Length: 417
Image (cartoon, rainbow, N blue to C red; front, side):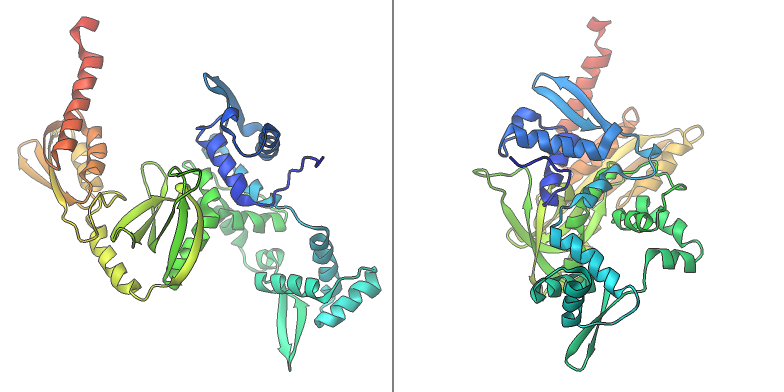
């Protein structure tokens, strides 16, 4: 029987597990249908070994729930980074890692055959040339080794570039990396550099630190590569399984959008199947594959920019990329003498809309957008000041007034007093 190991072979599998069980809490043990309950126990133990004191358990009618409980504004290191450091390796991987670096540590530049011979002569380790060649290719692409061609022969040497050397050469670089390790995308890169130099982030705390974003970074990397190279992508999306299989979508990626309200990140793209623009939550994407070059990329991107200004948030509604927008107007009361902060907030948060004073203490917010429903979520923060809602569509207006009526029954019903 195979023993338990904290190391993992597939990050995708771990990402799915952490996402469903530990972050969103939408599944309990009985919902785990991958292999056996023993597999669930192993996965749970593995994640708990990474997250330690951040694990919280709770009992529900459906069973015991396990989740991450952490005040992100009081941690100096994202605990989910540990998932990236848990990849398994073979015996050959670990041997070649240390032995090749040791051979090249004195600054020599050697060929493949010379390295194979040194491995046998100095360490008594016999490797076939293809195995060593693959490791040299991998480390050359990652910058650990430098490959130089002399005539028709490739020579390999150890790169002098290390995190420690850069930190020592550039004053303040360590603080910049500490900031990047927690404040930006791909923060695990900054965290890796700190660990390589035995440093820790001791200066930066991020109040709104969405630690779950790091689980999306591998997918994000493929997307930004596709954007840079102007290529199509195809992806599988969670939550739309058919017959136990995830559907595949394809399109042209343009931008990564981030919600200021929720912190969620979205991919804005052109969906060629439905001939429209749409946005997809990054945490709903399981896997991304980069496709062929899109020769109409510039034309589609120009069209996207024109349409982007008709989005109050990230939604393009149900329209095609050339579809019409829906106008909406809110009339809001604000006391100009005592509530100037309300007027300032309207101006600050109007985005693609316009704010106009129409009477004393009365202001209108108007916008032409693809999805007026996004405006209504924001508008509800002005409840008690809204005089009227016009435009949009009947469904949106009815929902708004029904919500107000429900609140009235809940909090102001005389019979409940």
